[in-house]
Amino acid sequence: MVYEFAKYPDETLVVFSDIRKKENGEEYIRISFERPTENGFDTVGFELPSYDIVEKEGDYTDEEIQEFREVVEKGAHLFFKYAREGGIKSA
Image (cartoon, rainbow, N blue to C red; front, side):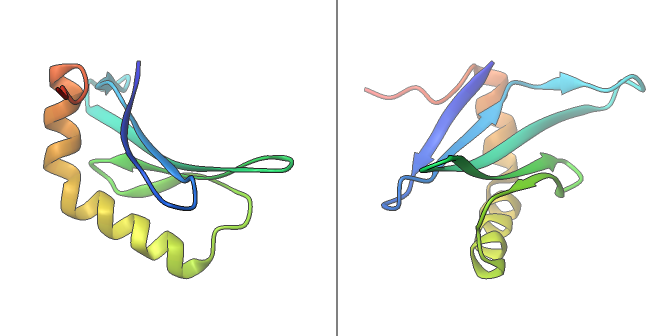
């Protein structure tokens, strides 16, 4: 399952996965930043809890990627919380 977290003014959509397990039993989630383009999407994907970039395609700048990393680092606990709860509940 994938859940929406936020949408930026440039149409970048921030989504996160449900909690998944690796073969060794470690839990992880993916957070992706996706911006539509004429030919598809610019995409940067991070994995928590490692904070590794696991996908990078398109034309995001180094500055944008650093901003995304900060969002992931500062919001890691929220991503896990909302992944456990089945997404963000809004009124």
